[in-house]
Image 1: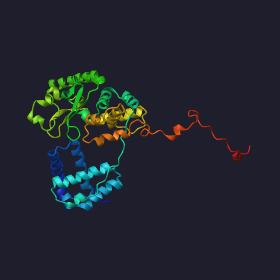
Image 2 (image 1 turned 180 degrees about the vertical axis):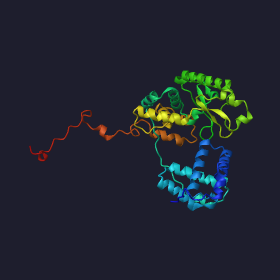
Image 3 (image 1 turned 135 degrees about the horizontal axis):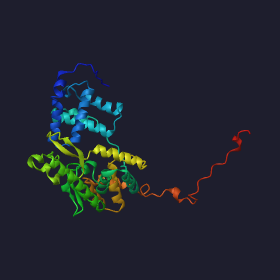
Image 4 (image 1 turned 30 degrees about the horizontal axis):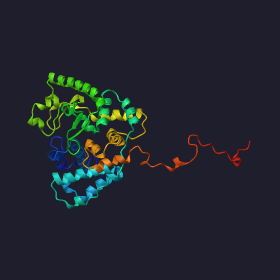
Length: 360
């Protein structure tokens, strides 16, 4: 494994590229990602892996490295750090993106790098009773937000980024903007949540009115819409349904804006609720989306309908939920259930063998 000493001299190119005042390489990486409309989370993760790749190889410039250094770094992630196939794949994608789209290096060896395959895993699905128990353990606004995710099938960031204008109570629909793959879709607005969602929107309006009264910044808008419509960030229809408590600085514009609910805060609350509810499953916030799809299929809804509500491009992605339906192992009746014997009485303890009795 390659290592570098903390007291080793810093090469001049590293100072030029990574100095806090002029991080040119990472800025170029960021600009290339934004030109292609990658999400802020992808931007952060790619920057993390590129930085790690350079530090692992002794702070050498990527132009001075090649296939052997990339393989060594990926081997370090897989063997020494025991990273998952998904993490391994993400690091490789970041490095490939760096060479192809930032450095513009026509390197044929990039296509020959081994790409780890993700193992096929079944999603973690909660039963309806388990969903109720977990939701009951969530405090305040987190309870309503969890029910919204479960009732609509939205992903965590789709629910957090929900805006006032995309909730239609008259048609009982929610428009999910720029979901995975930058696609819009329409999902159901649960009737049982309508009253509480209206109350939440009233609370959000009070936050919006306070921001306007104090002359605070508005909210972040996607795809440079703030430049096209300068007043839109401060307009009510663009405000968050689930606003956060504080302001944040937009990394693209530097303007202080009202942020939405912080995702990590809800994730931690959900994890505590799962433990408090006594649910012995490795459930995450995404399990609410998995449960939404599975329970719709259990209720007899067509798989194409579920596919549209989830926003899956391929129905094969939706079909994975047919493997986790509550049918007791694909609907198979175990042969032990056909045995003609009492099933409720516990088996008697075996009689002790007199040959193993201790002398009295």
